[in-house]
Image (cartoon, rainbow, N blue to C red; front, side, top):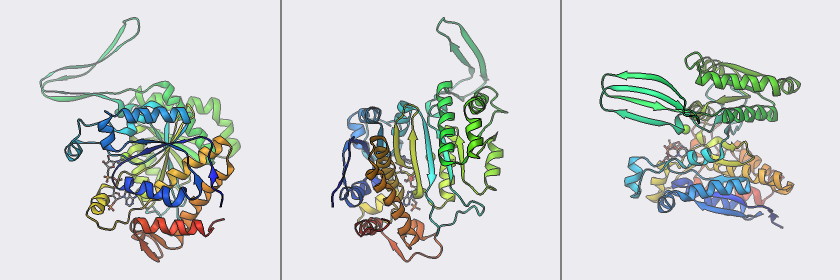
Amino acid sequence: MQKIKMKTALVELDGDEMTRVLWPVIKEKLILPFIELKTEYYDLGIRNRDHTDDQVTVDAANAIKKYGVGVKNATITPNRERVEEYGLKKQWKSPNGTIRAMLDGTVFRKPIIVKNIKPFVKSWKKPISIGRHAYGDVYRNAEIKTQKGGKAEIVFTDKLGNETRQTIMEFSGPGIIQGMHNTEASIASFAKACFEYSLEEKIDCWFATKDTVSKIYDQTFKTIFEDIYKTEYKEKFSAAGISFFYTLIDDLVARIMKTEGGILWACKNYDGDVMSDMVASAFGSLAMMSSVLVSPHGYFEYEAAHGTVQRHYYKHLKGEKTSTNAVALIFAWTGALKKRGELDGLPLLSGFSDRLEKLVIETIEDGYMTGDLAAICEPGAKKVLDSIEFLDALAKRLEHGYSE
Ligand code: NAP
Ligand code: MG
């Protein structure tokens, strides 16, 4: 069989722990036998980030700017325990934060639905996608902890040296202060990315903030969304039979529980961080959530929504079998290859990715799955597979031409 050829390289960002164990196995069993894979490899494993003083993360983000498409493995965001565990020079920043700050954009997360796993929320019948603004707010903040009393102010100095200031608090004792920002350009591109996604998927777009409390910050998000919708998308939306709905965040979380899904939920950065894990878990498993960063400059970075699955990795190190679900990692690869195929005019590459995705779903629906899904599937699993057995089952089906 002829392998599928690629034109342009994918940027490959490797990561840590259990997902680092699975990464080369996914390539070896599911991709390399079928594709003449071209990648530019960056090792974002914690040891190499430490060794390069995190330059490798910056280099990888620049490579995504050069080639347009990246696929990223899960990485450790070091905290104090990790600094000790790996003997790190310091608590390096989250690689995802660094990359998102460089590429800007919106992260779209979508649950991968299989018919034998029912969402925990009974009314949810269709996937709920999350569009997470990937720039600013608390992720690019400045924080101060004060030991003594004093006055905290927020000061803005424009280019001519004019100051605008406001008192935040007159402290009489120790306290904490936080400053954060966003830019109108980034919010506008977040809004556009969400409206485009809704149009492409033909689903309604819901957006919420807390503009009643945050009368300038959150209200700016609301106004920008509404203005862009009115001037650029209203007609396109009604032609597509979909709508845009704005409400307060607490109202939205209550309402979404009663919908049947099939919605894009546009979230501010922090809301998206929290809500995407809730939505993923409610649809079954963190390992069944795909994720892509869409930059307004036309760059795409595909990843799994979950982390490095630390607990499974420690079992693996002890020589025990693990049943780690590789589905979201596989969908990161298929998403990236599909986009590469689209951009480079290679329908065979996109077609292969579609076929692999379909086959993953069929395999689970036929009853062959890892432990996380077996615990919740109905009817029960035919066979609970370990991490590698699941990949072998997929490889076998690929070779035998399932889903063709
Ligand atoms: P995690 O890797 O998301 O895993 C949390 C738990 O969710 C696991 O212990 C496991 O539950 C379940 N789970 C997640 N993915 C699974 C999979 N593929 N198959 C089966 N079960 C899965 O979060 P964590 O272990 O708390 O965090 C580990 C590291 O990941 C941290 O250092 C964090 O910084 C990093 N992280 C990275 C990213 C990223 O790079 N995008 C995102 C989040 C976290 P059971 O233990 O019950 O089986
Ligand atoms: Mg999160």
